[in-house]
Length: 197
Image 1 (cartoon, rainbow, N blue to C red):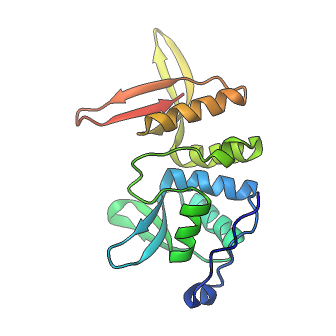
Image 2: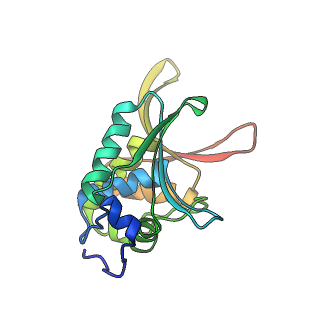
């Protein structure tokens, strides 16, 4: 898949050394999965555009992995900051061009992420789909144990608040011969979420 070359770099992007990829790749598919999980595209009122990731403060190695992957794909160093009062590591870069590329070309929505859908070009390519799911699992997934009538089960889950997205993840896993089902969950505050198990 070849990308549109309509995205022109401004002076600040050139100074950063930003390079947009010309073709889709498995590594980019993984980064898009990470973006759908713990990333966001911000379009602020003061006309600033920021691409942003957050990791748990104990996930320093994973934050480093995201930073290195981003550098490899876009030739840009993410700013990395530890935000102790929120217990997270923030990684970000300001760039209107980069945000437009993610939104228009890669089909990543701007925040708030009110509705998520796996992009069609990823659904249509098994290699990209596998890497996208890897990125989603690394950010919104977990391995847990559950007790039921004296038995202990090991479960692999991906959590999301988006019903259609959960259904797409389930269908994608089944297409890869991985059995999956969805559990709906509610909390005391009225939050509704979905675990793809």
